[in-house]
Amino acid sequence: MEQLSYKSALSTIWCGVRLFLRCWCITIHRLGKDLLHGIFRHWFFALVIVAAYVAMFVTMGNARAERDNVSMTNYQLSQELDSLKILAR
Image 1 (tube, rainbow, N blue to C red):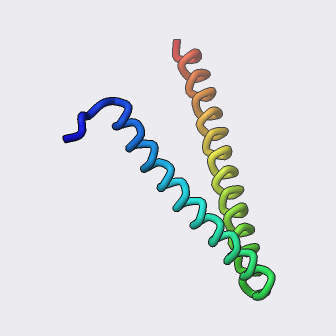
Image 2: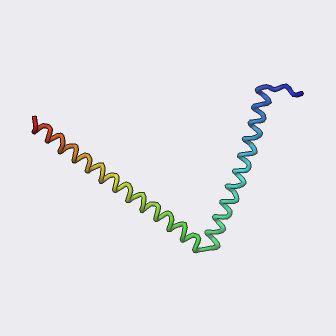
Image 3: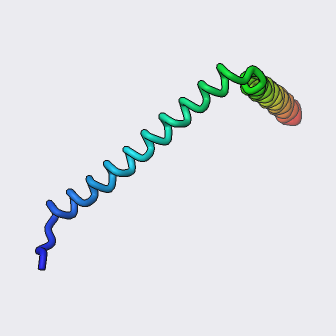
């Protein structure tokens, strides 16, 4: 029977981490090759990717502008409320 120790436990964990990283590296490598093949061979695929990025940045810009507008409105309302509190005294 094998005696359990921290050294054997850590080596088992390290083997698992190495296997996991190797699988992910293979997956990322294949994904990169597929993406490059898709972009170079299929112009429609490239257009869809560019359109998706443009839509993402437009959506992010609209959300940020709306957040800034709400923030400015809240600031103005709080200033008016403070002015009314001072006048009420």
